[in-house]
Length: 471
Image (cartoon, rainbow, N blue to C red; front, side, top):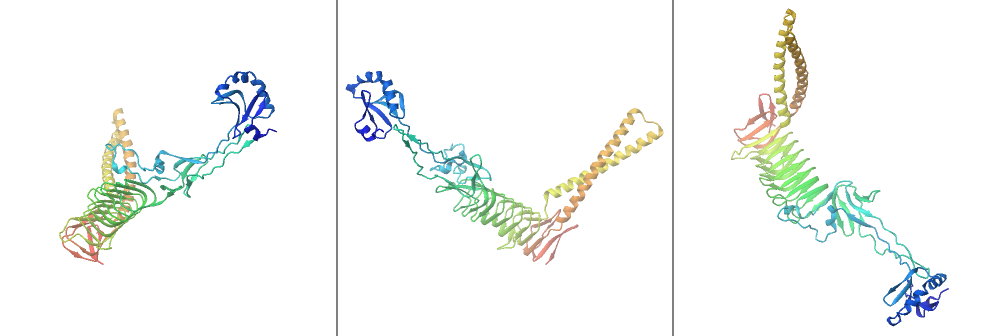
């Protein structure tokens, strides 16, 4: 067995040459001083013999040809261990900002809306891919020139990023979302938050918002010109400035004032709003007004309730598909105010369209019937030429066609009348007062208020128009 200590300090003779072992036991070499370079020729001549002696001595990694490096002629090399590679995540470009200290992108300021710049909220849909998981690669042990194994070093650091409970890794190694929400990196934990809160305003520090999740809460205001689109519920505890766009595919709660002639709010769910001024509102559900609605254009598919706080509506045109209940309609200055219950624009429009078309079809059938009767008479009298016979045949075909279509129209008209019967049952209740200048509409009838009427009273539909009574 080779004496390693002696090999390192004093060297060992292989043939006529004294070779040394490096301190890390990874090299066997011949020291060569610049003045002794003439020995190289002699060494090369005896290389094959030396190589055999090295192998007989069980030296590992003997080279086919020696290598001169600085002042050493290396004759054997060990294999260093390959360190392990820890697992890592490679994020898709959309989520790269999560790892960026700057949290911003380079922008072409002349062409891009600065409100789109910050991208503070990065949201995902269920099963959306966020990153690629690269599994850890184990290290490979090495071997020194004495044939002794060198273990691979252990991974000292744990995974830089750990996954939260709302993420999973599929069979192909893709990191995906279990649920919709905001992707956040909290310390070294990657997580998806179905509910997210913005503590301040929606302004240039936040940017336009496209939220997907269970609920977004905004503690401040939405500033001029910003857009907030939410797939989920939205709770806004501040108000809006002008030219704001809010789109909610869920329920909407606003504890502030929505204002601005160019501000638009669209809600596909229930809406509760403290106050609305000079804005546009569309609600595909019920609407609760907690204080007032003034100078607003609103379409509400469900019921509208304004009985909390001031309960005031004036200067507004509101078309409500369900019932309405309000404290005060209009004001002392008799500002034009239009309120409609049982208002189904599409239903009423289709009803009149189908009705008009059915009348035209009936008139057409009557004309065709007259032509057919004349044709039958000619046939009976034997005065039908081949040309007239063709014309009579076409009259029969046209009659059958129009008759089939008329039956379909009458069936649809029957359904529409039934639906209209339901909207005619809708009412408008006024608890305290309605002022002159208010137009009350129910279904296809309306009533102009010409004098102040104190409540509580209810407006209801009659075939002769809209009537009211005390309750």
